[in-house]
Length: 86
Image (cartoon, rainbow, N blue to C red):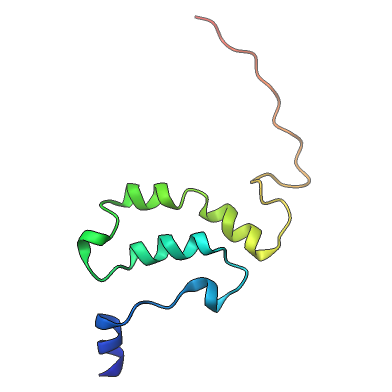
């Protein structure tokens, strides 16, 4: 019964307090996504995705991994392509 009460009444735990590697920016997105009142949440999944568009990079940086720019350290840079004129 205490878990149900906590879910309904208590604020959710703060992610960066549980894992110091997470930046505080993650807390704001999660808090809004898990708001108790529906009108305080994101209006759509697109809005949530927009707020979290850097989430994979943020989580990668927080993990301390290399190559967080989305490219493999071993991969060749993508070749430049000439523009196509029609």
